[in-house]
Length: 556
Image (cartoon, rainbow, N blue to C red; front, side, top):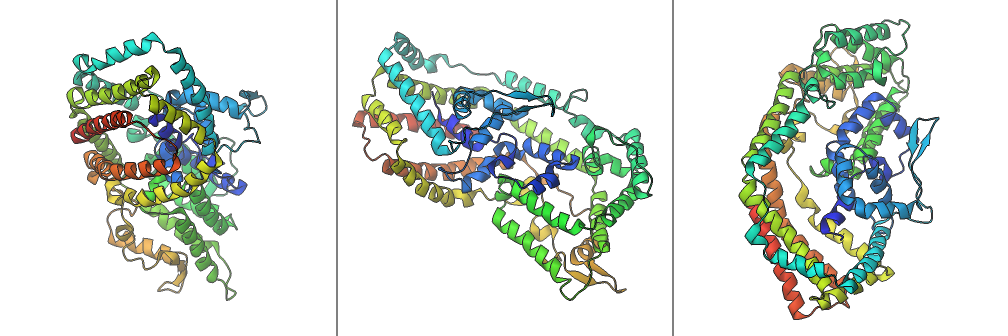
């Protein structure tokens, strides 16, 4: 049985790499994925916002052209949360993936030591239209078989579900508390593979000494040993994974020197900076993370291009480009990162975890959430069983007619027009204030900086040297402020506030979206009609589900 949850999951989940939505340029792949830092950022993203990356992609989705198959296929071979999500959807996705690759299976490549994922049949598009048409075809056959069989278990199941409220199956608060605490214990276990506890608390003289030795050779023009930083790490990824090494007095000066030398040895460093910015946006710009704060990918790309133009204007009069501009700029940024209070940041992260835990433990799951969830589950099951039993004959005909309509070009032409209207109508309500996640707003973080587009405009210092406007701004910010410009304030992050905002959005926008979708469905399926009795039954189911969702929302 295909549920609403299944269809939403198809659209809202990410298979673990956003590059599958667009053909990433080889240069971008080199800039973002060929080094340890790029891979680290990708891993962090995939385990956080990556799982809902496609919420952002929904805004520009073309229902007849955008290839969503690659995302679904990647989901099958992912780990962690993505793998858990796929396990719920596998009854739908497994036959779909087999159909799209003509039954081909994973093949191990002895040269690359990796499995090669089967290619999609080139005659198919991988679009949402193709996916739903495939599902419709399968449903037509399955539904007709189930109705024709008229199994006795249908009526027995209906009778059992009608007595549902008398013997409701719930979960005790004690069991829920144990579930939360057990999962936190697993996640934060210092001996587990997750490494979170080490990341939050571990200070290693060995690691600092190892990095210091490596930096000395880099900075002082010494021959380098192979595999100085084990695990395929570069300097940046090594610091990201163990940020507390930056507190070492051995590492701080050497890190600055090494960064300056790396820039000095890279004549095309300026091109790499702007390429990395544009590639980063092409990879992550459609993320819901940016769009929640009202940042559109196209606007951000134009902004980066404008910064590049401003930079090039510095040299229109014949002035030469110098790496010294970039050395000063990178050093100013590094000094801000050195100013980060890592211990306080880690404590604040830990406090957010505790606040979230306390919020969850204060919920009355036993009496106010699970019973309502069970009611919704029961209503969906009963509706399906009523359909199989033949009690909703007009609905049966309507579903059969709808499944046939989904295969028509006329239907998808209408969807192509109505879908963008639906998304644009309600997208603006997703925008949040950055402070919700403890981040500085543009006004806070860039106070005193006239125009971001002029970040790379050259300015003269009091002694006559030329530096970027951004370098001057960061140096002045450092003089006037006790904390780093990058220091988030996670003390203001309240899980309850975030959840209340989400619930409020659902309760205000949800009904509007439903009415709009219902109106569109009437237009899309014009030849479908239900008897007054079946209409009444369906509306009764909908009203009861809304009541249960409201009850859950009130408890949250």
